[in-house]
Length: 249
Image (cartoon, rainbow, N blue to C red; front, side, top):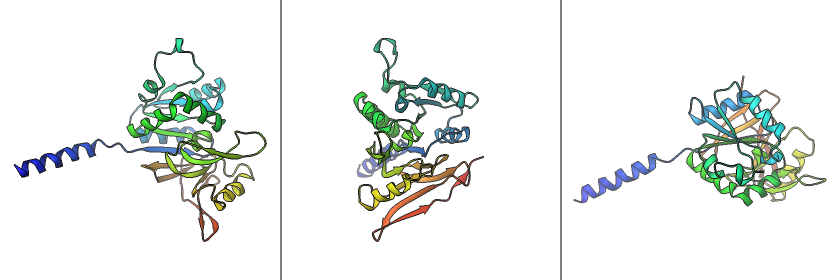
């Protein structure tokens, strides 16, 4: 009887463990290419995955939505878009029904601060957490990169870059567009040195990191000029480590 009970418990634990989903997040500093979308496709494990574009940060820009469809029209994906500037009368599905039916969610660039506020007001932040736990791949560049981390610097307010608190799915700080503007790198270093940010990942445009279960698995780049870095504080000094990347072709 004791043996049977132990066997049953072991079998039950084995079944529940096997149901655990690997969690993938693929942020990149900015810019997006077909090769990068194909990395998302591979992560889903599907031949033709359903990928939903969230253009919240750009105010559901029509230009951005058209660019999304242009980007993926000849790729093996089923493209969708979920707007947030909507009316109840013309929506067939809730945000949760729509987003949790996807294989991947791709977040566009724009105003990170406004996006975070809207997501929290609409409950989309909670839905995205459910999506991650379900094994839905999360990705994006610029605001769509920053949102997955603890915090980082954003140009979402007037005059100067400022701190924004994000979803915290990845327990690090973050700086997108790292190479693009000369003041981003020193400001990121300063915030880490002062303890405003913990250690984190900085990414140039067209470079990113695939995280598996919260840990970096693969660094990708569209060329030798585009890189990712791990930035931390050691013995009171900021240390920037350039990460070895795989060049996509």
